[in-house]
Length: 186
Image (cartoon, rainbow, N blue to C red):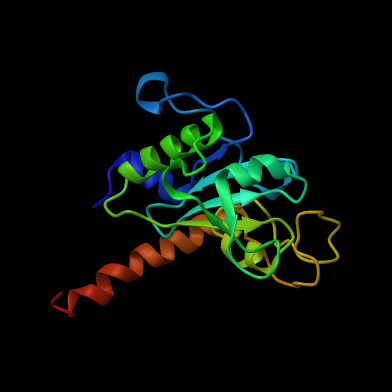
């Protein structure tokens, strides 16, 4: 069973702006402020850490206009195109920013029972639509043609549901678990 803090993190995952000043240590200075869980609050010039450790992965979201130097401090190219990025574990570049982000990632991981991987998604990619729908829980079905600059071009995919729809879905999933595990003997 989950405690109150873990339940709150599952219902409304914290999202931290990594492009804003970060504490040297969350243990001594506290957590930085969180941003609302909506694509509308994500700055294309920014980089964000989305805490999905309870359910899936940690996600670093990179805005399409994020400073290349900042991206290179945290990520390496992982594929043939410029939008395939991988998180550099352990503050590999050794910069102050990389060390602070590594500290944040490890602090988030320490609140989880397992060591979740870190995925990197870039604004405007198809991967953004599939990964971020679990984080942008305040958004109404955003897709191409709605006038939202954060909807992946050509994806035609829904990014998320309203917060009320998300809570209803969470309630349905929670109510199904006891029934499915009652006869399973797990």
